[in-house]
Amino acid sequence: MYVPEKKVTNDDLSRSLDTSDEWIRDRSGISERRIVSEGQANSDLSVKAIENALRGKKVDPKELDLIIVATVTPDMMFPSTACIVQEKIGAKNAWSFDLSGACSGFLYAMATGAQFVQTGMHKKVLVVGTDVMSSILNFEDRTTCVLFGDGAGAILLEPTQEEDIGILDFMLHSDGAGGKFLYMPAGGSLHPATHETVDKKMHYVHQDGRNVFKFAVRRITEVCTDILERNGYTSDDVTLYVPHQANIRIIKSSLERLGLAPEKVVINIDRYANTTAGTIPIGLTEAHEQGRIKKGDLVLLASFGAGFTWGSVLIRWGEF
Ligand code: UT7
Image (cartoon, rainbow, N blue to C red; front, side, top):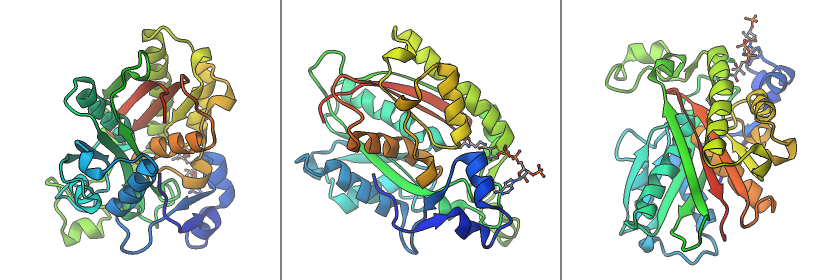
């Protein structure tokens, strides 16, 4: 994982915005977030996360077969950030593409990458979840700008000969009817950039928070219940639950509804806010670094985001 060094606290934001540390903490669980410095782009964060992921693994970037970068804040519309990353790390033999799944982007990318490993087509697939949300936030809109941060996480998928180790299952969903609740209107072919789109603040995140909240709680609980049931497990079998970090109240509500013990959940929204595609790989990395996952543990990942998109991935943790 990698997060930028610059910390922005709730108090920092409330100096120029009609908000307060108390409101942001109570309503979202966020205390601070990391924000890129000028000139720092998605690919810079992605490369740092990849370097951290590969450190000590003796993997030559030339061995990589595929790089997928999940993001809604690429360096630019094209070329893909994955291609930019490929060049920066010298992964000469890989092919690369970006995947747009918003907050579910990392799980979408993980499931996609896993298919190439499972079929035997590829041996080393790098999956990255990175967003620079500060590049699309209106820092005059208190209903959105306090909620997000910048950050990146990366994993390497490889084959294993061991039975029942690795990605056991995934369930991914989308419902385009939810698109109107969380979106960035301009910058694409529908509303190309003009003075008007800039004046109307159409290049920023727009969110109907209450509606997104309602669907997030319901869908995350549903998909986690379904994936556990389909694999013959209950919440008692889960060692670690890594949910998307959008709101502490969504996380706690899903925890209660799933009947998961509080000590099993990963929470870091207080320090990083919502880093969109970054939240799950960042959470997974921190949990691993803190010694919270060992070989054979059952790890449940869950996400919900713009689209709507949502899903879950179930892992039996292997060697690291
Ligand atoms: O990762 C992508 C998916 N995104 C999510 O999952 C986000 C889901 N939604 C949420 O997390 C919550 O809905 C929010 C944190 C966005 C908002 O919390 P809420 O409890 O739903 O608040 P609200 O939108 O109902 O707003 C309550 C009040 C409003 O004032 P009135 O109309 O009651 O007078 C807002 O104007 O709080 C006001 N408000 C604020 N006040 C101080 C909204 N933002 C702020 C703010 N500071 N930053």
